Image (cartoon, rainbow, N blue to C red; front, side, top):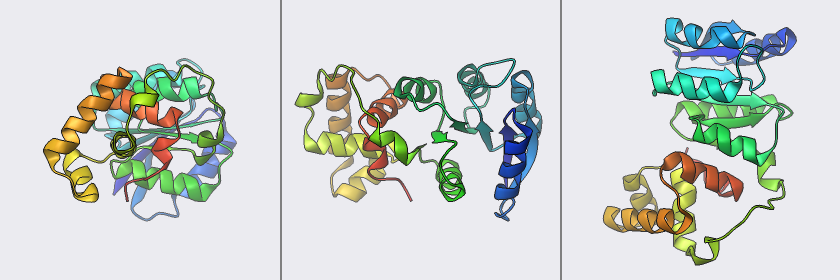
Length: 210
């Protein structure tokens, strides 16, 4: 049974989320709050597996909460649920430790899929975000090979080097070399930054881990 905490300051939205999540017999809501100051303690006390987190809670910003909670509980999954579709915010949230980023205007079916994927260890970003324009500097992307982009997308979606090797019929050493090369070309330091970059280019939507 997966334990879920709801952190959303609008009671009607919490009610709707609760009803939606009860359609899954293998999930249980173990806590909920609309106060940002209470979230970390609820996650701690309930030993939650997943936190469904609004970014704009009174008392504490969601990105700060995500960073704090991941520092205390690296194993807990955090799925952001927000109306903020700015790519800069998406990147910041994922770099802070969020495992997924879901827009509130998406339908309930996508939310259930997002929760399932995040709980399985994959990362998730709302489909609509891949359609947003990107005006930032793309220096370095021209030197990234097609294979490196493919590996970048798989890393961002939660695949390990061994799983990527199996999927692409490559050796693990070859996969690791491609990862090192693309991270060097794009000045990426860790998986969170790889994920953020992939989100920016829509690559994190290309191949989600089942």
